[in-house]
Image (cartoon, rainbow, N blue to C red):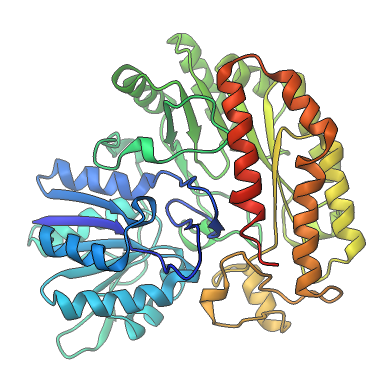
Length: 481
């Protein structure tokens, strides 16, 4: 059986790249920084090890249009196609599914993702997809479904499908994997690892890793923990993780990694054990991760630095404690300041994120957040206007309070414009404030000077150039005027 996993051609009404793979939030970018699809790549690896013929096609990265996409399918003749979707492109994927079924009625089509996990019946009713796979362990579900279609296993849980009479059925709630160590290391040849990276990387030999799945926190705006993983967190063992690092270093000469876990620093004991294992094996690598300001301390940060930690991404989100409490971040402004101070003390770089324009926020609130981020002196940062996805607590609140601007016009949820009504500011003013925020940091002479004074190598010069291009064309330009 031939199995194809594809990122379907994006609607080309806009210039740029629509982020889909391994993204919690979907936005248009003017530059091609796409995240490695860890879980789909794991799924293809599992299928390959079971003897299935597997193929991968990222039409977004390859800039393949609809015509060439269908030519590829015609030549390959796959038996089954999997694709991942996100809220702003779900309706486009419904149209593509109808075209695939019309041209290739024998091909079985399947769709995965956070949006369809929340609204599976919507896609079954509005598309020609044969199967909707809900939940976040896509790799496991892909294997189970193909095994079922091959007559080797029973039908998996969390599946939506049609009977011959057209009636929509489902197999109940999805089941998450208990033992992540049971998954094989991802075959990096199936999904080419060199196509995916971060603008802030130093090394060209850069790879994504995952040591855990899920997040126990309940931030009201965040989609993945709520939609895909039921707010549960599961871990690979530290030994298993470092075994993979060592394997990748030996096979690919990998020098830099990013742990794309939701919150890498949540379990301090686990994080420290990973660091100690890296140190024990004398692995000379650089790595970065997503962290939380309320679960790092001086001892943990020292261990991380000793093990090669280069950068931590911290969600600051707002200077308003009221906003932090309302979106259930679970930390204080003082904890933000302390975490930044301790991280800088260990000479670990910081990437800060913030959101501006929640319905209750005033212009003063937003300017205070911008000023606060500037005062923290992060090494890199990003600002965004809150986008609320179906299935999140924020979306439910927005429905109840009539804050939704576009209701179910999902194509509007691409981070170009506010999807929430602000009680004090127009869309135009919010967009201008978002652009102002980026400029206040990246065009600040002192920020630029700090960057220049830190330069020690050619790699760091390249990093600065990539960072500026990403700031200007990847983030600021795609925001609508």
